[in-house]
Image (cartoon, rainbow, N blue to C red; front, side, top):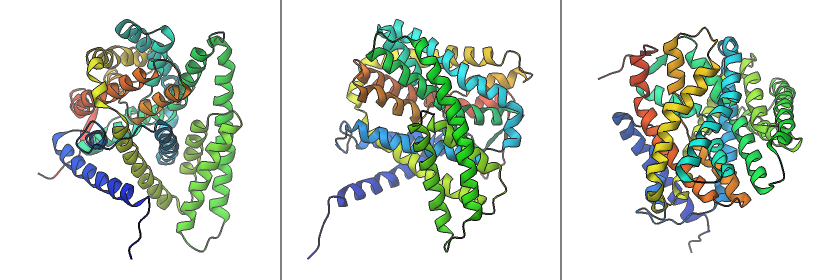
Length: 402
């Protein structure tokens, strides 16, 4: 007699959605559409308002999966980053990842207040939610279109998008706390910011050294166990740092950067493993976020959310970039491309679940607007990015088969 379990149907559905997403991604590549966006579209079609009719509104599960995904994205980003390439742009990258995120959040918050009539706290919270860029979205588009960026543009974008998420996370957490505790001032949270960044960087360095030591010294019977050890270390670094009051996201990026700069015998295999698992998690995250959204709730927000997206793309991001790179020796065309490359990915939608689960009034509107901003932003900048890079003469196109 055949037996069944509660996992049978979810496994079948997830497998079908993944295959549909891959097929959509292949088609999207020919049309110039970002693949990850199409995975999200597949999730939306399968969701409660789509053809699949799958009801999913578990924001806690989505946040958990999102945090795990973000942890591995940041670690893999650090692991794949060449320190020698990013070192010359370290100062510029830090400015864009901190002050740049703050300026973007503030400007978008002002625009959101004017467009949606929300209280200042909610408006600034929305600005913080959509303030950070997504490295994987940027480089997946460039890889799909066969474009390589010239000069220091690519290392700067790598560094900025790899380290700006901790700033966005802090802003979202601080503003959420400020809304729920009206007597609290934002200035009282400034020491917390420095604590999180310093503790995160320090523990990322120390625990990253420990990770290098264990992967170098341990003699394990199977090569696959080294990947298991690396996954365990990533979780340990994030969890311990967060519990000790630091930024776990910054810690895993620093640890990945250290491991990537160390001449480890198995580094290539580990890098390949983490790239694969990160992409799988990211695809699953986009499918899950597609299931989570209710498209029927978006139409009333379309016009103001589209205006907000255009403001983010054409005003807030360029102002933040040009101000922070004002004294940089980078050529103007490279600064302009950095200003244009402000792709948002899954991170804003993940961040939008934090105030939602915290019980912030109006948080559902923030979630829906953030979702629309991500979709519109990727469509506008993702589709046009290779063309803009060519027009600015910042991209070299690889030869592709006809």
